[in-house]
Image (tube, rainbow, N blue to C red):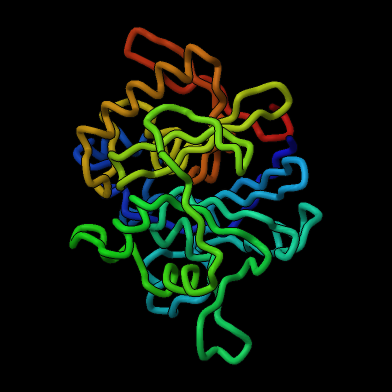
Length: 284
């Protein structure tokens, strides 16, 4: 199994929303804010070579939304999903599977693009199976008022219409090996219903794609919960269990949203489990 880090674009989000009830005086030590109180974020996807499969985990927010939409997120830098895949030595047509951890726009927007005439949307990865799970798909396509702005029809309906939508069966609260993709998947429900957290092996190490369970290294302390989470108390419980397991088993975390820490390790301290070291994928 060979892993590639794919950069789908940088953006910013409100620091208060990203840390919920945690005071700014605490979270700004690890995630400093700009004058508009927004913190740096990225969409770092994972590309997995696994036998005859080329699996892309998440796709960033894409490029098809309006300028007004993107103005809310202060995109910065010049990273691009397709270019990053090309730089890794592949084309979008080589991707066999797209695993979407969940269907918030900053995780799945790049899965769908405008067609050449810009009169309808179509899937970007035309040779790939798209993977969600039935519980989360139903949650996203019949959204609650709290999450409605994050689940966009133009990101979801073209996937179903393409006939390439597939569901991971029997999502579990423990890591379970998935035969179809050849990776382990854990499901958590605090951030949104049945978010999928993949685990892979890379150079003899267990590498977990942290997604929105732990969006940045600054979110490692258990109470540091995003205001976006629909079940924050459940997130705390899930984080506690995951961090203990990760520390005991020596998992490394692949950070989807942290632009400055690609891979991190954990350590036990008197205050609980905390950040240990930061690595690039090549250094792991």
